[in-house]
Image (cartoon, rainbow, N blue to C red):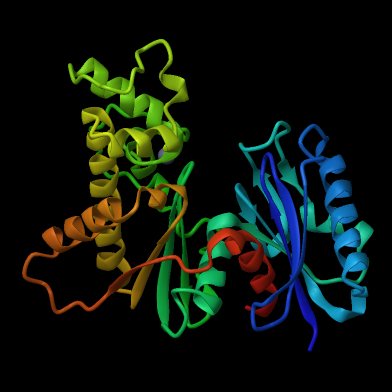
Length: 319
Ligand SMILES: [Zn+2]
């Protein structure tokens, strides 16, 4: 049976891997050589990486179904175009990604989608979403994103932006401004990118912190600092974790209200906060459900782990 090839294109890390169709990893290559490249240069680095991956595993192009690529950005899936990105030194704008890739791999099937969508698909085929007719994968990391899988297929919407739960507005009178320019988006209240801002709001509201950060150096307040702060019993860190969990729990409730899926699977860096975080998300969901407990929607942790982006991208080929 042919292999599937996945590419995970991040701002600092680019990786490519081969899997069999059961999701078993055959080989993997990682590079950082793309970081300072132009957009066309990045395509060249990807193609070199994939060629090396094939060569090092004695695999020929006819032995693969195709190449699936996942990246953080706004994607026109059907046209293979990147509308825009924000995680790279260069910005891809209306960039014909698939067409450019095909100049290196003529005749090869190449598919492109955003990172949350590919992870959702991977999770539904090989991870915590396996066996469910309908599931939503939600990632809480630098930003917040989601992918919706119904009967084995991603729900992409008219423009391919379905599942952008991070930019759904959860507090319409909020003073928290999001990267999109609106106020009160779920991600502005809960994600890694906004941790320094959240910390600043807490300091300004008069809360004190025991982890030694002040208004001058709060930019270093990241997920690791948050976890350390929570473990050390720091007031601000605990308050930020709780607020994030309550926002995510409320978002999960909103997903339930709109889609009523079989399961919501949660993944992404902030889940490293552990059981305190996850159980608070579940508690917030139950609190909002009140006596509507006839719902048996499951809230589960992602199961794929470190290669989620790669396996997800590869699974696009089997959708
Ligand atoms: Zn937003």
